[in-house]
Length: 139
Image (cartoon, rainbow, N blue to C red; front, side, top):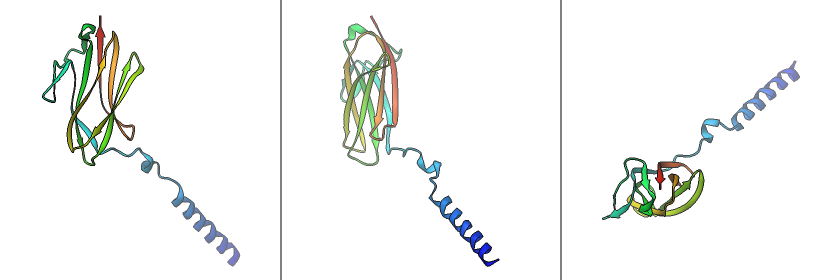
């Protein structure tokens, strides 16, 4: 009887230890970054650190030549980095790393454009997509 109780107690303790060492899936979610994008714009120029020629329609004529993706970043921990990832027709066309040196910072990248479907994403160092914009370049 003592051997049976000892075996039950041992099995119970082993189960408790096993249950404690199994990972909790809720704890395995990707950590959220302390960086946010408060404003962004696809535009044809930058003036006084603000977007100019902001594109509201989602269509840009190719004759413009270049476009900018302007972002205002809020960061709790600085310095930090973000990337602007440009894609054309579903294929990556460029990746621009941008330094975030201040808790509130305006920054931008630009790309020479050709006709097609474009997308620009702001990506944190953790890989989290913070913001995205899509537009179409027409001939």
